[in-house]
Structures are given as structure tokens and as C-alpha cells.
View (cartoon, rainbow, N blue to C red):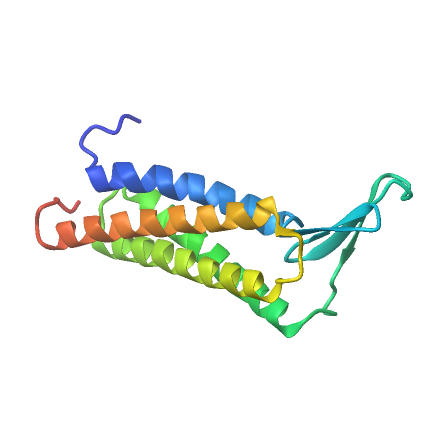
Length: 174
């Protein structure tokens, strides 16, 4: 589908939302939010499990799910990231629907979904980074999350600009 007749705001927001959502989804599932070297091996901490690798381990790595046995702050980060996931799906789906039918309600909800997803995800990342000050470094999945959240929030902001243009009559509503 060519993007002729599509506003600049949507041309900016759609790639931001799509790339941001992909980065966010990968980071959400990966156990590489924090990486630490211990006794010749490595420990990787994520939202849902901890993995360890060592030359002495058969197969190279072992992962263990938390199963409810975790710190309260980590549960809070998981909740924030789950809400961010829901808002991301909502924001991306409603924004893509604007390519086919321009409705103010879908536009507003898509914008709010993207902005909320970015904010909630960044709050979760800040809490995670603040509570893990004893690690060697934050892992690549953590940084993917931050970049994804920023892109999703920026995409939601562009959709909000589009919504205000639509509301003021500069963009036709179908």
C-alpha cells in the first residue's frame, strides 16, 4: 500500500512504533537485562529468569525461572513492563488502523497507548537500573528496552500531533 496522502506525522510514527515494538518485544523476553561475571562464568538476569553459563556446565548454560521467588522491586518492574506491552500492542494496532480509516477515537487511543507504553517502560527500566548497582554492567536487552521505549513514546507523540491536527480540521476524518 503506497503512503500517498498519508500525513507526515503518520509517516514518522509508523516506523518509530514498528521498530520500537520489535526492540521492546525482544528485550521483554530475553534474560540479558543484567550481565555479571562470577567465578569464570557468567550470570544473566532478565525479567522472567536467571541464566548462568560456565565451562563446567554441560550444555553451556542453565536457566531458572523465578516462579514467584523474587524481590518486590523486580515484580514491580515486571508489572510495569507488562502494562507497557499491552499499551504498545494497543498503540501500534490503532495507529496502523489509521491507514485504512481515520477516526479520531482510534487516533487518540493510539497516541495515548504509545505515549503510556514509552513512559511505563522507561519507569520500569529506571527502577531496574537503580536496583542493580552491584552488576558489572547492564545487558544488551536492557538497552534494547530503553531504545524501544523511546521510539514507541516518540511514535505516540507524533500520533498525538496528528490527532490535534485532525481535531482542528487540518486533516480530513473518514
